[in-house]
Image 1 (cartoon, rainbow, N blue to C red):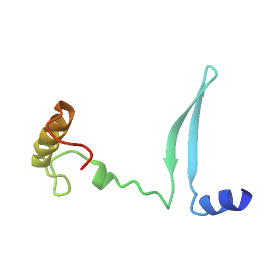
Image 2 (cartoon, helix red, strand yellow; image 1 turned 90 degrees about the horizontal axis):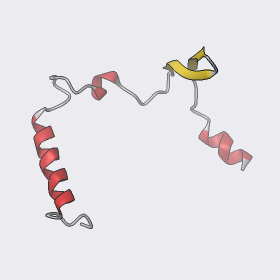
Image 3 (cartoon, rainbow, N blue to C red; image 1 turned 120 degrees about the vertical axis):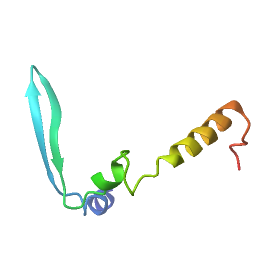
Image 4 (tube, rainbow, N blue to C red; image 1 turned 180 degrees about the vertical axis):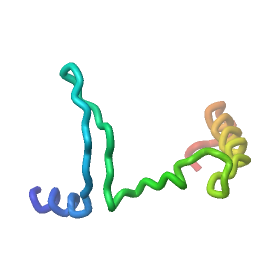
Length: 74
């Protein structure tokens, strides 16, 4: 078990800054050189990365799947 945990934590690096207030703790800043998060890809504003037209396609597929028009097993 220890070897498994060690292998899963090999790439875990970074710093976390937390806020303490009235007995509560909350993250204030999280940074890591190995982070998979990319602010350029996470944006939903109009840019070259995110195609706003795809939102309409996604909404229509999602609505159809919830109404039973699409078989979700396929």
